[in-house]
Amino acid sequence: MSDTDSELEPLPILLLNGPNLNMLGTRQPEVYGADTLADVVDLAERTASELGFGLRAAQTNHEGQMIDWIHEARGQISGIVINPGGWTHTSVALADALVIPDVPIMEVHISNVHKRETFRHHSYVSPIAAGIIVGYGIRGYEFAIRRLADLVG
Image (cartoon, rainbow, N blue to C red; front, top):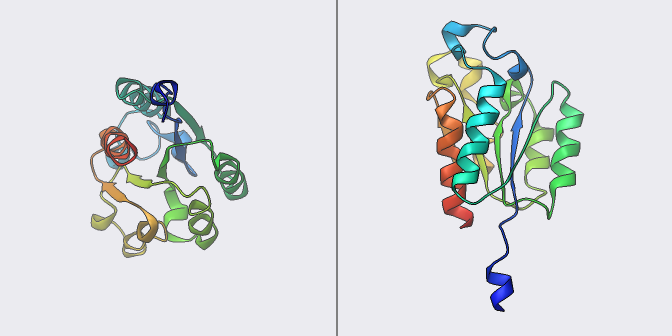
């Protein structure tokens, strides 16, 4: 490796948020808190920057759009931090897409899904994730980025 190769910045982290996460701060604040998606992205950007990473953040309520973003990220990212929302429990297609970039995946949930309805206890993403963080509010995103940086650093 040359000196210039060692000075290259790492590829950015991709932060993905699934359905209904655009409603953070207004949707069930007793479950998800008062923080907004903008607060999540701000925290994630600050954390990634502190660790020397860029961040690309996106949210969608459309499963196909999420899958397209994951496909397009191949070779362009260091890892993925994802809160798949309701797709966690339903989407084999999303789980299949998440292996395509061949990078570490960190799964995040704001609430403790294991203290909620039984259907939320199963995740199609967890078996492919390097780590899973649940129940820490939006701080879970910070923890996930820190762990991801450790894994790819």
